[in-house]
Picture 1 (cartoon, each protein chain N blue to C red):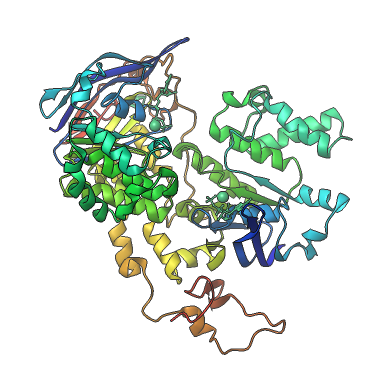
Picture 2: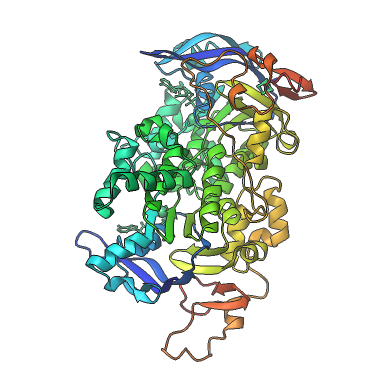
Amino acid sequence: MLTLDRVSKVYKVGTFGGKDLPAVRGVSFEMGPGEVVSLIGESGSGKTTVGKMILRLISVTTGRISIDGTDIATLGGDGLRAYYRTVQGVFQDPFSSFNPMYKADHVLGMMRRQYFSGLADADWLAKVEASLQAVNLDPGQTLHKYPHQLSGGQLQRLLVARALLLDIRYLVADEIISMLDASTRIDVLNLLGELRERGLGILFITHDLSLGNYISDRTVILRRGNVVEMGATAKVFGNPLHPYSRMLIAAAPQLHRKWAAVAAELGAGGGPRPEGCLFHRLYPPDRPAGADGERPTLARAEDDHFVGCVRLDGEGACS
Amino acid sequence: MSLQVTNLRVYYRTLAGDVRALDGVTFGVADGEIMGLAGESGCGKSTLGNSLVRFDPRMRYIEGRVELEGLELPIWDNAAMNDFRFKEVSIVPQYAMSALNPTRKIGRMTAELVAARGIPPETIVPELERRLDLVGLSRDVLDRYPIELSGGMKQRMVMVLSTILNPSLLIADEITSALDVSTQKAVAEMLVSFRDHGFVKSMIVITHDVSILYQIADTITVMYAGKLAEKAPTESIISAPRHPYTRLLISSLPEVGVRYAERRLAGIAGSPPLLLDPPAGCRFRDRCPVASEQCLQEPPFVEIEAGHFAACWKVA
Ligand SMILES: Nc1ncnc2c1ncn2[C@@H]1O[C@H](COP(=O)(O)OP(=O)(O)OP(=O)(O)O)[C@@H](O)[C@H]1O
Ligand SMILES: Nc1ncnc2c1ncn2[C@@H]1O[C@H](COP(=O)(O)OP(=O)(O)OP(=O)(O)O)[C@@H](O)[C@H]1O
Ligand code: SF4
Ligand SMILES: [Mg+2]
Ligand SMILES: [Mg+2]
């Protein structure tokens, strides 16, 4: 289980790093094996920052990310190498992830030097073929090609195959579909679905609601670093509770329903609900904090469906 | 018809030979029509849009006729097009946002653009301000540099600029693609309101995002490998597409409510042909599930029912 517990990130910006830029604020969620969690939010909401913290490319400012109970911040040396055999990431732009000078087999070979230096040639080859097959790439048609000879969808699948060389249990996939054409998008999405069926846990980062809705079991909606709503995907999309989620869903262009129809269904263009802040009705402001002195940032509205305060900064009165 | 394009053919000159990016397209856009133009990356959408307004030096006019309001546009002659560009036909090019001159304030840029058309800039100020109000931009954007505006603000500004002289036809190339969903919706709805206010008579809206077109377009035209595959009223393209490519394309699109666990969507196997040396006959042949012998001949783009055009032997 990969667990985020009240994770925050503050970037230091300005000439001498004198200014704080809070990018992620108290985010908690967990992801099990064989589960696709989509992390949805608009530009700058902190999605990539969350992904990078999970991959330990950047540190957490406060809070804790753990795998099966072990805080990943404590890992070093062999422990960290073992972590990277379990958790890998694939990022947005498949074209810039590859050096145009190297063919596909060289790109995979770099993984061999890093992680499988003791492996015999035949075993390595078998491993490469297995991971290419898992992403529906034909080794003979792929390995001797340069990046520009492969399509965007093929490159994106090659990146996933590279991660699969390790027996990973979790994959962070940051906007890996957005760059692709409609006709290849669905293939990469279906691939993620197949990997999930084989037990892989996937954090699917996207700003495209229809992609997240299609593939994920659970959905986390992020706004300005705060989780405003999360839960089972069918519940979050079928009955969005937070005004921001309602606005997002009302604005997402759909294929068989016009904006006006969706807005009418959600009420007042997806605006606030008449009954005010659901979070504070479920979790009154005067209710005592938890045993550790912390107040929750989300209240449970129903089974596997949580909502935050309508005031996104969590300060002051909300309604 | 506001715009009538007949058998337009435009190639790119390259060392390896001609890239046949626009290979004989014929269509019309009616008064007041918002025509969406969709298709995979590289199918020639921008080439079509650009060729109606400004040829880039690598583009080569082969043949074809373009009429706007009954008048032939000399599209092959960039100098002669000066009389029409911006006044009669205007384009917001793909990546226009990043192409704004960073050293000029927005106001000065506007003044220069208008002055270059022989119109004293002060005369357009009242209308400019009215339109900024309309799209929700504060008037002091005129005093700012492009870098100081967000993506959505820039797109609105570019839209106001390119339509300030009320052209008959506006071509908007991927103006919503780099925006967040909420901004995307605002900009898309602005396109409709510009038509409704009569700032432009008709529009060609280019995007690879068919669901945006479903929201705002009256008709949708689908391109494939340098040719038109299908054109029809929006509802027909989305709910009753006839061309095999359009059918596969529409059925591959995930939408809210469709879940992998319940209904597996399928992509289109294979990839489009290279336009350097495209195969004879139907260009979709290699990927088409219903292709036959006949498809070795090129299918004509014909009207299969009123207002519904397709280029496929199986639907004609
Ligand atoms: N290395 C950095 N230094 C300083 N600020 C940063 C850094 N990386 C990101 N930020 C800021 O943190 C916030 C969150 O950024 P992040 O990249 O996580 O957002 P995102 O949700 O992935 O956005 P997008 O959809 O545009 O990819 C933004 O305000 C961003 O400007
Ligand atoms: N300057 C150029 N020289 C040579 N070939 C070009 C040039 N510009 C475009 N092409 C080719 O012409 C074809 C059509 O390109 P175009 O830019 O019109 O496609 P598009 O449909 O707008 O794609 P996108 O969705 O990626 O914007 C492509 O195959 C492209 O590679
Ligand atoms: S003409 Fe033939 S190959 Fe082309 S789309 Fe129709 S059936 Fe398919
Ligand atoms: Mg990001
Ligand atoms: Mg283009």
